[in-house]
Image (cartoon, rainbow, N blue to C red):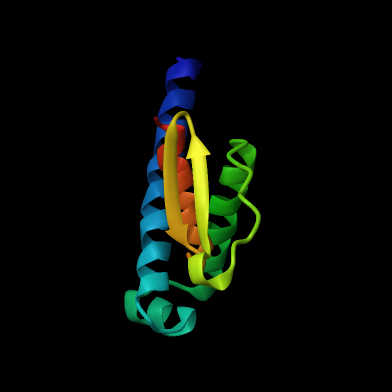
Length: 109
């Protein structure tokens, strides 16, 4: 019974983390401050930053840190991630939360 309970708890945690990843991406792409976005969405800034930290920790725990190519000249700057035969290129100004989502998606591949 303990294994089932543990599995259910892990699934709930992953779902919650995915939901928060989406919320954080929504906030980052909203064009407004975190404080204003949180107020509009009924979320405390403390809760927002708590979950942001948890997402970042989960990426580190999952060993999803990948080597990035050295910075390129400004005209072609970007972030290139290669994993399992998949190459993803993001703009150099991609938000950390966007990287988190991409890395999470790569983990499932």
